[in-house]
Image (tube, rainbow, N blue to C red; front, side, top):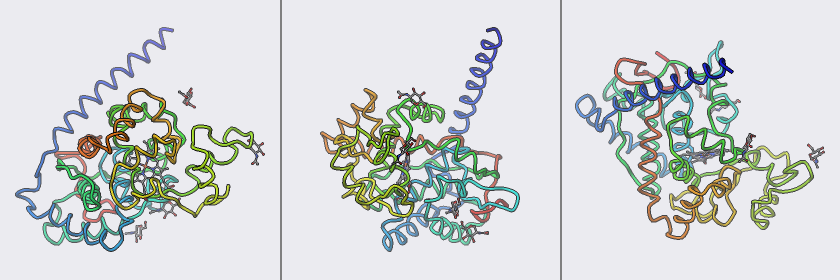
Length: 327
Ligand code: HEM
Ligand SMILES: *[C@@H]1O[C@H](CO)[C@@H](O)[C@H](O)[C@H]1NC(C)=O
Ligand SMILES: *[C@@H]1O[C@H](CO)[C@@H](O)[C@H](O)[C@H]1NC(C)=O
Ligand SMILES: *[C@@H]1O[C@H](CO)[C@@H](O)[C@H](O)[C@H]1NC(C)=O
Ligand SMILES: CC(=O)N[C@H]1CO[C@H](CO)[C@@H](O)[C@@H]1O
């Protein structure tokens, strides 16, 4: 009993220390960090991102997702970009990263920036800026990205498994995951709206279609017509086929996601779970009824918050010369 209390006190203390650190770090970021050191940095990022997405619109979604995966694992410090080495299996090679794409865009941006201002702009900032530009290029909102992040030197595959929310998470697990990163229940409802673009492979949701509880059943919280449609695409063991997360907005950033989730057509259990909490449910209903009246603005605000998770600033970390390896 006494031990339990001690343990709780210890964890509360740790949490306090960490949240104070987080705050200090977040304050280390600022708008226009590269104003004097590399004035054209943000312009270069935007032009290159635009060029790639105009050739392949499907790249916008994985570039947005890449920033999310970076931030939720060890903070937004570019660890998602590091390659595995002989001795270390990096985040990139963890199961949830199987479907990350678009590393060539980050590399192209980095090459151009190193040419213009060597050793100045971090890969972590590139990820945050590219995510913003990818969304805005496909008609989504734009927002100001505080910069000044520095790059980490550690990337461990098992960290990805332990820190990225699973598509099978229920609302309690989702809220807990976001809270552990300093994000609110509203942020959860807003950032899940990232699923208004992009695709998913069958294994991420196939459990809902076949044998949901081991009785050969389907997920009762999903629209039956949608289940039939998805079954026609995904056989139980299919690992290569993919479907749209939000049909009709796959390559255009519109608030379609909320209408679909409201109609019980959210693809993942984690999307459907947003209807099981009063705050997230109210947000979904509001956006669905108002065609996303506040979503575009909310999304930028929550992205800025997400972009501050566990950042390295000042003298910590380094500015990588190449995004897929530490200096
Ligand atoms: C709330 C918890 C979340 C869960 C459980 C989750 C889970 C997933 C899963 C399983 C996929 C499909 C992977 C595949 O099978 O190919 C996916 C795709 C995607 N996610 Fe999330 N995600 C979450 C939050 C987010 C957030 C916060 C963002 C960004 C703001 C985001 C953006 C995306 C995008 C854009 C795609 C499509 C990627 C593509 O087209 O390649 N997700 N997510
Ligand atoms: C890093 O890994 C990517 C694939 O993820 C590969 O294309 C690239 O050549 C690797 N780079 C280095 C420097 O090993
Ligand atoms: C969510 O999942 C956890 C872990 O499986 C379980 O303990 C909890 O009861 C679930 N909560 C809800 C609200 O379903
Ligand atoms: C469904 O799941 C149960 C329990 O895991 C298993 O015994 C059964 O063989 C499964 N049925 C099919 C058709 O996969
Ligand atoms: C983009 C990328 O690096 N994907 C890797 C994810 O992990 C698998 C192994 O689990 C690799 O084969 C992929 O190359």
